[in-house]
Length: 267
Image: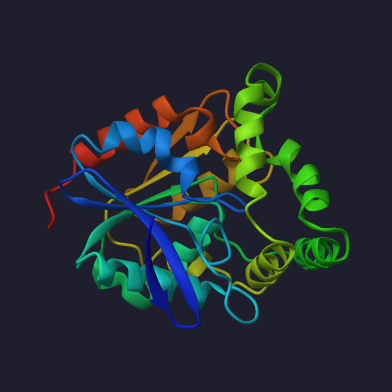
């Protein structure tokens, strides 16, 4: 892993392959490792940048909530450090939330977008309260209590039944986060803005991916994004939940590769 200082936190990232630049952003509470199996397939033709978002994996949390503004600035800093002017950006869950903010601030750096298992709307009051409750639970009871409650919601039922190895790997990833990491990331997500109005401003080639068994951001949420981004594609990944590119990495890599190969070449 390479590291770069971004504001009050050190951000870790991995680089794989060579070719047009693609930045892959993972879900909460995982880290860049969720992308590695798919990235190994994509790296034969593309230069992939896999950051650990602030507070995840080997990246520091910094001070206070990990807001979308901080995540966007961190992504820009990693791009600067790796010499990337424009790139294709792919984000799962919180990675998608961060990309909406990145688009608002740095859209000139985005040549195409892939949004996976995410939603554009802000949290409802109930969802916001649940995030803040989760933050407090992490502080009071430790990360394992929160993560054990999240795993059944993050992975599809077929994955939980047939792939205990993936369940164990996902849990290992999640446990790299400390209680404070979980709390500050949850607080940052709770205060994220509504990005529905942002969707109509996205004028680069775009695709939405979603697991057919995603209970947190289901197909209906992906359809909202597709309907509001002009000429956006939607692809559903079978037998996958909220972590669809991790649960079905070969299918995800194939769909992403088809989309990428159809784009104009960018530097």
